Image (tube, rainbow, N blue to C red; front, side, top):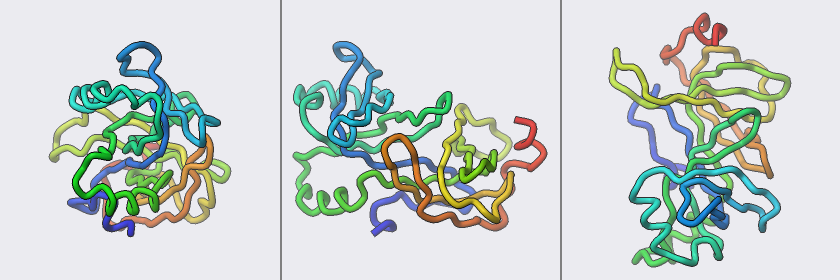
Length: 194
């Protein structure tokens, strides 16, 4: 089912950080682009922001967004030690194929796919560096880190990996890690210096 839901990378070294949550959007103010996604029946309030004008306009053209559970694609980040989300899109329950897509969404709630370079190996955690995918010799406009909890034996700084993770409350827990061979976008020396 993963291959149907996740965007498949165009190249072995393509970065990715994407997940799906079922939550209620709670803005900080009227039509604010910042707020919280209330997950786990409101038990977890994860600081979030809305990305893109189209997503914002769609969300605020539906007044029930802040009152009902919805499915959100999000970019996860670790900011000052906390899991935060950037809302990429909201799945539209009015779509013509909604009933078949709903099964796929339900099967992938709180699942994340992270592709990037290991920045730090901590005690039972990996910190993955993710950046904008750019053409050779171009500088990415944005880059960030995601911390993933779990078994990390056998991995080291500078390796490019693909991680599938499951959100449990305020943490992303590693389900599987695969080393992507031959990707050298980030040197070990640069990774240690950051």
